[in-house]
Amino acid sequence: MSEQASLLLRKQLSELNKNPVEGFSAGLIDDDDIYQWEVVIIGPQDTMFEGGFFKAYLTFPYDYPLRPPKMKFSTEIWHPNVAKNGDVCISILHDPGEDRFGYEKPEERWLPIHTVETIMISVISMLADPNGDSPANVDAAREWREDPRGEFKRKPLPLTAAEVQARIQEEMKVLRKKAVTAHPPIVDPGMKN
Image (tube, rainbow, N blue to C red; front, side, top):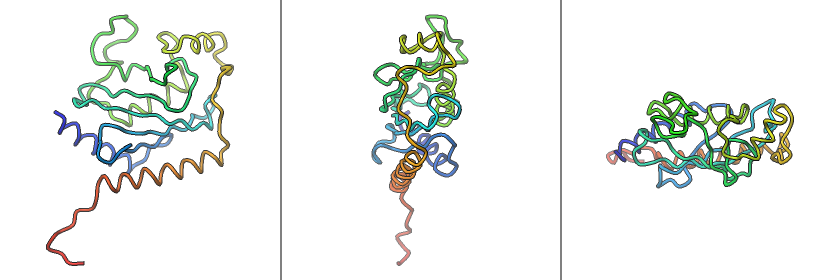
């Protein structure tokens, strides 16, 4: 199964490089490990995260897509669905099947049809609209419930637009370089330079 997972992940990475999705970029941490990805999320507009620049990691299981990846923010973020250690807790990243606590329907949980793109779109949506019913960070959830339209006391320090743009450009250079080295051009040994 791991060869199948590897091929699928390479295909998804290639697709994201060809057709980038607004709001995030993704690439390999190490060119030799397709199961470890780094993602950079730009905080969604009209949220307390707007203008923020958030780095996270996706760790894929060898039986992907039968099971979901784990996601962890390395940038500190104060959010009901992000544990204090950075672990992301949303339905799409929960193993398939019935929720033993009864909060989620099976169709809300991981399905093998999901992709890195659908995961990231869900995470961006989660940033804009937290789920306070099953929080990973109870303190953040309490603050959010008490003032859902206000701003959390411990909000992330947003970067200026220029800082975000500069960091995005730098990250994109690194990710493009990683994508190119992960997929070197095929050279016909019979051709001469």
